[in-house]
Length: 79
Image (cartoon, rainbow, N blue to C red; front, side, top):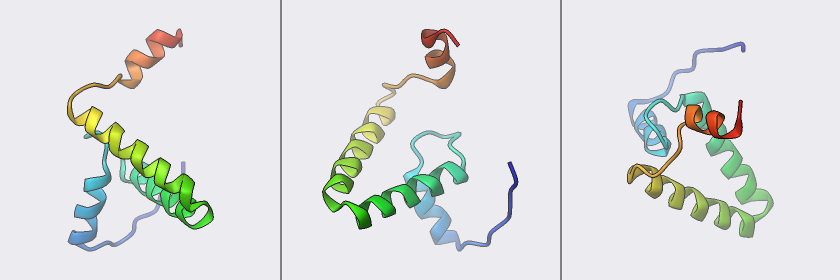
């Protein structure tokens, strides 16, 4: 994957950190998630409300420690 460096303000970084669902989530993943949400909000406002609600529920579940790691998921799925 090709990468680039972008300059963002400290406050912007803090806002991106708030969107992280787990500690090792990359900024690339966070930015892609934010772009996805923004596109859905523009293209289908009703769907975006559903997506935002689902993300908030998932974040609450993750904060409670109720999640499956990628390693566990791969094992369960036989990968």
